[in-house]
Image 1: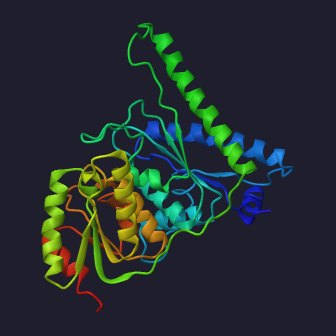
Image 2: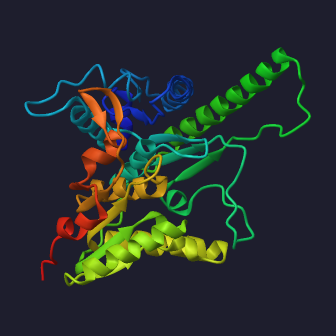
Image 3: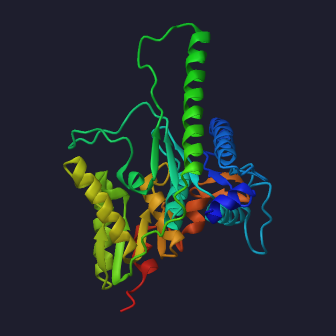
Length: 348
């Protein structure tokens, strides 16, 4: 028996249910998905003749915030980061729901972190739209770097676009039916994962290219990303670095987009240092996932975030971006003018 399957049965390595945490709908959705996961895990284990003996799931926020005790000199958010990443490392698999027009940076980080450890990653999409690149005919269900890191993508966003019954009760029933369809699909996928568990795989961990730095500024999806990346590249080259810039979105075909994502991913993995661009409403989900993967491998990552506002709950919970991104970075840079100094000189 695979050791992670045995730990799951004993309640020592539960399935990690990633969750949007900053508002009630995300927590509500996460709790419903966890219930579906519990059903699928129990069904799978019982089919194998392995009755569960302990907790089968881990739900962030519920199982993190009340359980952490910060170490001396450690903030609450640092303690939560430490516990959550430890739980991912110990988990059976990761279920990551992605929805809305801005995927959560913390959930995306956890996708990359789990993939970097070699765990099975199930991504659940519940948007009713795809992404359409201006120069690419085929719509994309998921951004290419996230597609690259996911083992399975569950697409359950179908919902009528027009012709809806104006009756409030009928509309609520339609929404509830969508939730039930999603839960059923998750239960089936998790059950199948237990019955056909692939085990922990060895994630790519290539040797580094000395003197190489890589700029993950969103892959060039927006013009300003390339402008800022080129400016940063010039300053780093003046220090003696060879600089690579993520530019997967410069592709003109679906195949080129996939190849560009693979190239950006490999260039990041083989660079001595990687700079993640963190400006915007949240960290770009592909960039956040890449940061998670690199952190799992122990690579050097700098997060550039020039935001003048922070996510504030209390003095104990005060962070510029999702705590997973902030505490996983080796260094935070708040001004582009300080980036070269923060990266420093190449080792050779």
